[in-house]
Image (cartoon, rainbow, N blue to C red; front, side, top):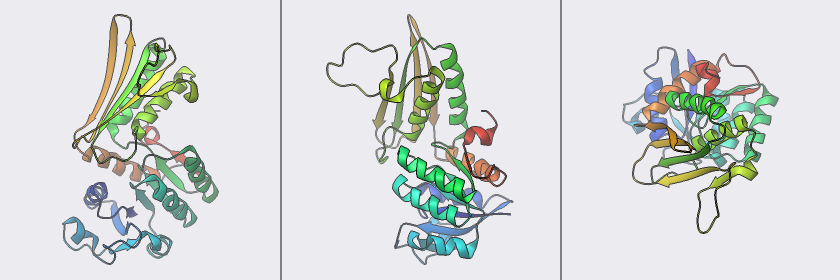
Length: 273
């Protein structure tokens, strides 16, 4: 049985994650962490998410180390915000708890701190900007296309709901990184975040990233490969957050057997690297 702690207790995505875990024969939720000094502290997790009492009490993030030491989960799942997640991951690593992280918006400096903590404590980790299985097949496709269409103009467009706080999305950034690595392009020289005003003609090496925000869009990503007289569009659309939850369950099952002290991603989980 895989013992799991979940952060962001009471939130939209964490509620879906918890409900999915409770349907698994090989998993159980043993701890729930909310924001620091959350008003949900002391309440039963199941009651909060509308499924009845499950005997798991929500604790504030200020008690994270204490809860992890007491409950001894095998894995902590984090889908929160970058600034909070860095500390959560470090505390989990210090407590010897493996992590599955779908939080986005980490800076290069934050990722360096996360990597250092995981390596130092030799925990197992899956960190991915998008846990949806289809998105990671999408990543594989654009990687293969970039090798073939290496002289085409490439643009990335993403669209999300009006509440999303970071832009561009972690998935769009990951798509850029995959393509840039294949093409041997430098991020500082080729990445263009939208365009405005008299910007001049597009350079051959540019890769544009464009963010759209509105309504309740769960997550759309498009990569355009545009040549003379034709274009190929690779599109992934998430219809509901359940797409992410399915991938999270697979990541949890994978991480307990993952390499120690290394950050794995969904390509590792799905065996498509």
